[in-house]
Structure formats: C-alpha cells, structure tokens
Image (cartoon, rainbow, N blue to C red):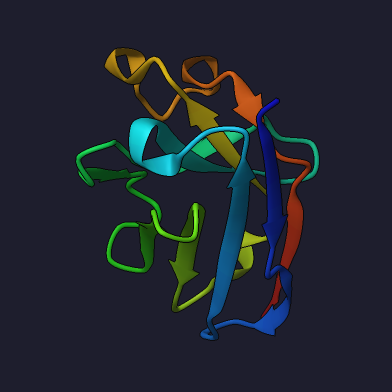
Length: 124
C-alpha cells in the first residue's frame, strides 16, 4: 500500500525559508513521478512543482526561482526547498505520487496517491 507522509511545515516570517519532506513507502520514488501541491483556505488545491523519474522538474510560475523540488531515491524521500517565502505561500502543502508519468502535469488529476499535508504559515 502506497503511503506518503509530509513533514517540515511550520510558521515563518516573510523572506524566510522552509524545507518540506515527504517520506514514501509502498513503492520506490525512482520508478514514480511526484509533486507538491498546496491549498490555501477557501481556494482550490494548486500544483507547485513536479519531478519525473528522470529528475526533470516543472514549477508553477508563482514559485519559479524560489522553490526547488528534489528527491533522494536512496531514502525514498521527496523534498521541497522553499526560499524567499511570501504571505501568499501560506497553505496546506501536500505530497503526491503517480505511476502514470505520461500524464504528469501540475493538475491534481495527474496524481492518484496523496499525503495528509503539512501546514505552512508565512507572516508578513
């Protein structure tokens, strides 16, 4: 059974940094494609970044140059390094995985496995 567990969220002031982690079990990260999503109160869940099995990354325009997605296949763990955080980055952050990499995109419909989320709060 696939399980994704996020950690690393918290409260930070604008301009600060956080690193989120997502520990995966039930499959190997090297054979799947993964992504980070976020959802602010009252808004739809939106894609932040994805990484495919070759390590190719894609980012939402709002986070380009500030966020970096990466994975450590030896640890079966996905990361999201977030720098220069802004109040608009506040939300619940979710890790997601899919084995259908040919459908990979920043849309939630591209992923079939989801974690429970970790809260990120950025104060200005």
